[in-house]
Amino acid sequence: MDRFARLVADVIGVPMALVCLVESSRQVFPGMVGLAAPWADARRAPLTHSLCRHVVTSGRPLVVTDARENPLTSASAAIPDLGVVGYAGMPLTDGAGHVLGSLCALDTRPREWTTRELELLQDLAAACSAELRLRIVSRHREQARADEARARAEADEATGRHRAALERSQLLLRAADALADTTGLADVSEQVRDLVSSDLKPVYVGLVLVEGGTTKRLRRMVDVMGTTAMERTHETYTLDADWPTARAARENRTITVTDTAQLRRDYAPEVAETFAELGLRTAVCVPLPGTVLPLGTLVLGWDHRHEIDIVEQAVLASLAGYTARAVERALFVDNRVDAAREMQEALLTDVPPVPGLDLAALYRAAARTDLVGGDWYDAYPLPTAAEGGEESTAPAVLALSVGDITGHDMRAATLMGQVRSMLRQADLDHAGGGPARAVNALEHANAALRLEASGTLVHAHLRPRSAEAGSWELTWTNAGHPPPLLVRPDGAVDRLTAHGIMLFPGLNTAPRVEHRLLLPPGSLLLLYTDGLVERPGRDMDLAIDEAAGLLAAHEGRSLDVLLNEITDRIAGPDPRDDIALLALRIPTI
Image 1 (cartoon, one colour):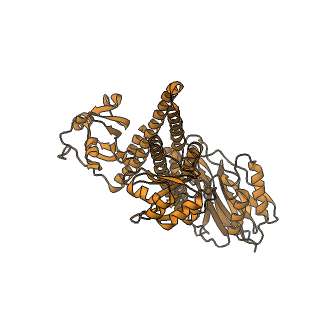
Image 2 (cartoon, one colour; image 1 turned 120 degrees about the horizontal axis):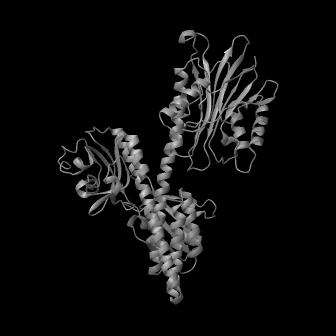
Image 3 (cartoon, helix red, strand yellow; image 1 turned 45 degrees about the vertical axis):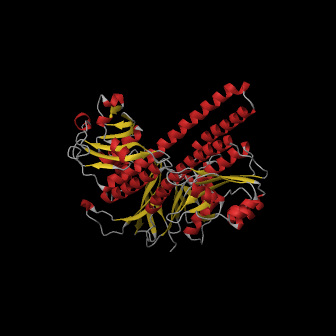
């Protein structure tokens, strides 16, 4: 929670920020930054000092330029005692949509809040709310453990019904543990199937989720490992369709089906056909609770008449609650990852056309959809500089870079964009200074601005050599990155192994070292990130040798085709890490 407060203070640029939860007689601060004693020591304050209570009362954001002049807040003791003048607070909600408190930015002077600042605060409040919901699920998990312990203490003298209750509480305990660690919708679906199949013994388990905007639809989570053709045939249908799963979600109540006559009477003809196809005698459809409408339906079916008593109904309702929280978290993660991937791919622009060179690049995302990487490539022309810093009329220099920022999350993708842009700026600001000087400038900015970006990169400048027709001079510096591969005109492949230490704030205090090489016509250069060649259980040097062998046989193929072939052969169809490749070839004269 303190981390969320620090993020608000840093991103919005305010001296104080709070994660505030409002209770009946006080407010508590599980997260805070910038608050003075005694409030910082106590981490709480009376409601007389609370502006956040207005957010809870109204259920809406509260934005105040000057609390001293606003009729709603002018009498608050937070103004003289906490020094609050400017205030912006966004609601923090639980899984049922109840407002628990506020994520707020506080200023000690009047503040005109910008639309961008309020959007960022709202995004951070959404992430903070998700974390609070996860903690609530963890609290439920602890309660489930307590229930199990209590049930065990009574098991010696319990009746068969008590023993059944113990088994159900164990199911809920396992559900709380398993579903609290899920990250994607497919993972949620798989965990639910495993949980109920081992305890309740249904022959069919399905998960149907609500999706869409104004026209709500239901989509089945298809079990790709299963053999149920019905899930593909009836994968999507409208929320008002005559299916028991749709009725359960639409009416927010559990629907139980026990015979085909009921199906023919109350539902669409294809429902009875599906029931028979699956060989079911009993089915139960439990709504997944959401903030306004259910998130979908959990479906269990048995091939015999199965009596669902009140205890089992309560177990299924609790299981649906755990599943709904896991679905919410998975949707939140998926949305954030999608946004990060879109941002990352938008930054990876097309390579520029360069007379006398063939250029191609490839970016391939990791197979796991919940991973976002910091891999990038870049290529852009630079002006050359003559003496005195004036721009030269000599042919432009081509800058090339491939890098990998540490991490597999939104922060890594964001830092990648900043580092890539700062490296371009450093090249332009130090025209004629060479790649090492640009990387040194990047490291200086990284330390001075406290971005704390770390990782590896290769940065190079390529300049045509007029003295040797068709040849280019390569100057590069390597910050801990895998060695570029150079295919010479005779087919020999060299690893350009010279390198320095990786990018890490405060680690490198010496100037970066540059290396030079003449590339005659017929040369081919490949820059790549470690996602191409690094995988657990496989020797990285052997993978680099395999890439070199594929490069050596490049004759006659386009670079785009060649890069895809190398990636398919070495990384396979499901790479565990993002991959960025950049290749250039000097045509023969």
